[in-house]
Length: 289
Image (cartoon, rainbow, N blue to C red; front, side, top):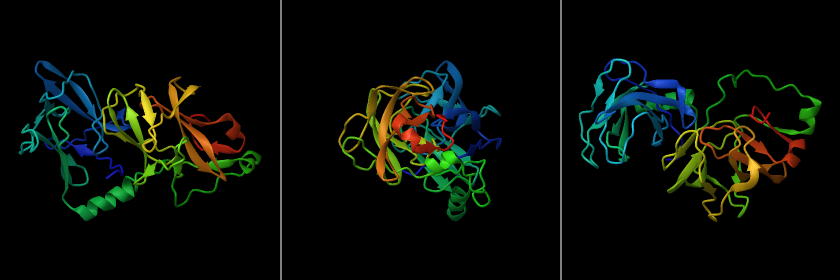
């Protein structure tokens, strides 16, 4: 399943939320825990995107290490009742705020995890109503039922405005094939190892998920089309916000394809258009503006 599900969890002992709004992982609020590994102890921030294994940690962890998890509020060690059916390490259980639990393996590198709802119908209703549908989360400052049309100006009459939340029909600039698969923007990624990067295809919704670990605030080595395997990195063009290399994809706008640039630095939200297209098209609420 490629659609994003953001999980919101709390400590099974004291019941307090484990979500950290100040520390972003995968451009979303993270899950904050204390971990212990041999003689080291410190904080870890896990991705709240279900199925993502990205994290930030103060403790050095090697693949195969079994770590202990503690609640940052009550300091109680968190342990599940079961062992991992893949590697036999202890499973760690957390409570979902919508009812149910999510379990993860305590062994670094093991990708065994599970989610269990108390009431599946109620959980799906909350996911669609509160957390968005098909990966789309509407901007929190807008009430889509009541917000009025934007004021028409001479500039907006002359230029097409791609509004926040618009679905972006994305194509490879080389082979011209669609980069959308299962309603997600799918790219190949290279960062020491090969994997896939799944991006939200909605403008100004920055949710992402990768099949390999991507350090926060670091650039990736390469982004490629999953059809033709050609690199999307653009030479002699940098991010307008942080100066990192950018990748280019093609978007369908009006009656032509336009170049759309995204920053290759994890966590940077800059994106922009080719200078020649700025006379005809504007991206609503983008950092470039």
